[in-house]
Length: 372
View (cartoon, rainbow, N blue to C red):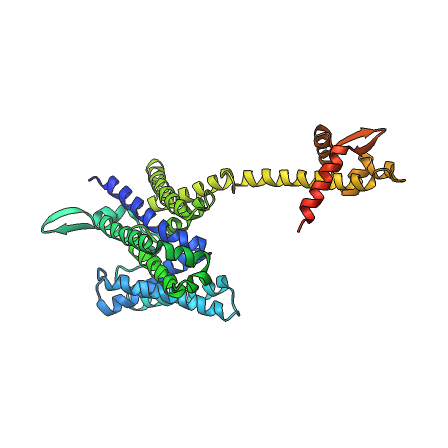
């Protein structure tokens, strides 16, 4: 297998592995927690290294995962006091633990290959150099197997506990009534996030881990409300981002991880603009339609209550209507034009009058608005 193909395979595997638990973080409004965890796990790695003095020890992953859980626990404990919001709690816990790790590295591990740049930025291009040799045979880059193991663990966990995670995510009280333990499932998910983070960041860096963990699920959430579809779309979007980012890096000869992060952001903004139901264009069109509908109903109510009155001419001329509702002339002309076309009003002697059809429509609108 060529190094290029190995890099691409590692990136795709990491993207899918990160996007699966990331979907639940997005739904539980805990996106910033992933950013916090990807930094504070450095303290777990440092502490585990001080105990083992071996950078390849599996205890480094265990230590990082435990500090990830401690990050979640500390943040939520502070938040539960009601004295701090969750983002403020993250703003306290994240710098505290990360800074302790930086100080420990600078003070006691300056000569060890454990620097903050390698943790934060990573370098996917170097991943093929770290080979897995078994019985003298080179079977490929180590990162391929470590990230595939992460993906497998995440898949098995989600398949087994999908129903429980779904209930706990959308209705924790119902989950408790049904006998599930929301706390146990919550910390199990956080352990999965921590393990995925520490397992993936060695190859791609924590910045790309955050991008893959949040970007694809957020993008998928703009396209669907179905949880299963969201998980599948998240994985697919993550794969597309990884592939496009890789070729972007090749074309411009720049950082692979950085290009993938950029592509994740660009794909999100593209979907954010053009998504069929939740996109920006769709939202603007919907608001415009709602504004016209509200204007039509308002004008019909007004005409219904000012027909055949002493001040009818002063109250229902086009100029009076524009001034009364504080509409600009273009909006007033548009609403009046639509109602004329629908035969709900007519204009006589420069007075806007409601038709019989318009009166019926106004009554129906009133009943639908104030019906019990």
